[in-house]
Length: 481
Image 1 (spheres, rainbow, N blue to C red):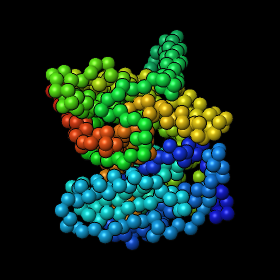
Image 2: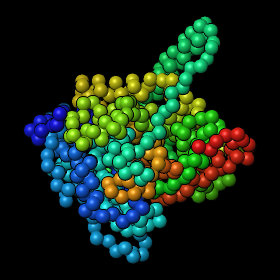
Image 3: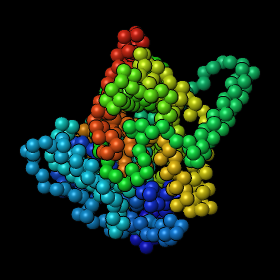
């Protein structure tokens, strides 16, 4: 059933949270293309796919400023107001710097509520990453990162098959082939339940303590108040996804474990160098730093690409397939330079295993919903802001298509998502695409004036981890993909 222009759909609690002053988040999704963009063709494909999605063709109608409530109302989309394609000199002197400055400039203001809350900028200039670049600027109230990536993929088609939807990596279900006795299985079940209860209790205590008083140590990457209003600088680097899988298989861990370990190693390397410059000492990095990441977990089962494609084709209602349903998990990071780089991966696995056996993120989400119901979105947003303000960075990892795709009529080279409006000075996103993994960093330009160095430190840390795995002979007999 289609949603008529007269109908209105209430904004979800998560969307209301994203529209609260001081917590108004906006997504910047940078996409590099292998060819120059034909703007007319690009608009035609947008009109055929994305514009038919209810959120991308709806105005936000404020119902109550006091309670922070609003609804979505369908409207006719004028693509000329949403697609910005400036005339550029293809032979400009420094296209890399121009593209980076342009993306940074988009973080200085939010979107107008007089039209649907998105726009796309087309930069037809070749740089070192791609032949052209587009930047989607999307208000976070439209949807969370996982939902938006799923939607983009539903708009895409395989390069190898123009009529086929992309294939996205899915979690493999572990088969229980154990022949252990009933008593042993019962013991494992009881022990697992006890671990879940214990880990959930600890996570809830840390969650509440972080809201009230527990703050990270002030470091060169820990932002103060007002950082959500300052411009951001965005940088990116690509590493081989096959190399990531090589480390994953060799150490019997998950990709999330690998990227969390790389993050900890890269931050240790960057902070060590920074403190050495500042203090000019032999052992410059302070010990026992409290440095934590807020990791965003999607709590909604991901909609199938086929369902999203059908929803756009037939302009159907969303029926619970969409929204901002996410939980926040606080991940402790140990900042120290290690002789054995594989320790970073082992520590990351221990941390992630504990979080998997915890319901802390669901408890946190339930608490936010309750606070919104009792006190309104402003109070709930204030609590969410405290969690982010008292931690140092945000970290996320999203899996993309397993092979190269054609998106909006053009072959895609990479995807690099980020965000602005966060009360933190550093956001790190990992985004896979075909055989590569993008490290995308969004950093406050005053707090972290050299984000490229941080990106390089993370890439170097990963290379050290990969080399250590190979030198120790851990890849023997293993497939690298």
